[in-house]
Length: 231
Image 1: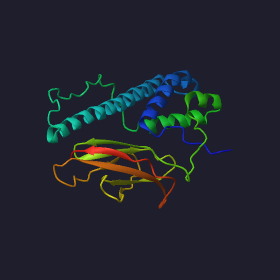
Image 2: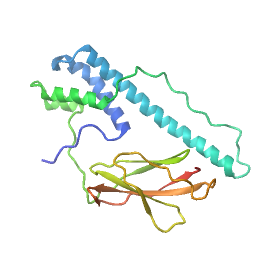
Image 3: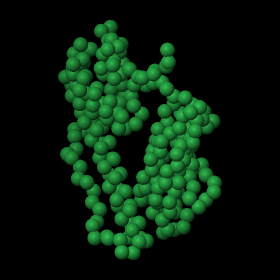
């Protein structure tokens, strides 16, 4: 039988969907597995806060792209580009109930309790999505997807590493012939904080990445992405 992956998704958006399901189904199993009303409330509060935080971060990333583009236009044109509409941050919804640190460590302990009980079944595990799918990670063919966002002073590179222990990040300008490794992050995201090559002159940076297990690169190089960086 193929090994199982960890049940919890690696990416933040996947965790939102997972928590939505777990919080919706958990009340039906709470009492049979020895939990109390406060545990149900805790799970629901964790779900609300995580969803709120991930959504507002994604919205702010989109807003920051508009601010960065506006700054690039103001700094260097093209001349005649309309500048009469100033970007604005999208208003956020009311902040939900604050929760303690370590949401997924806390819920992970609940999952361990559920799985340890004699009335636990695989059907319950499937319903709560606490059974991982069979692993399909192949170190020979693996490649990651990249996403890059420019912020003031840095470019943030996001990736997924699946079964890798780290990720080698490479970068260059379109006019440069050779890729240069700029970091080996253990977790996503990675912040490229290098300054502009020419002060006050915006540049386009290209990025690639390749998975790492131990001290060795594995799999295939990612597709190239480009990010306009204004410093």
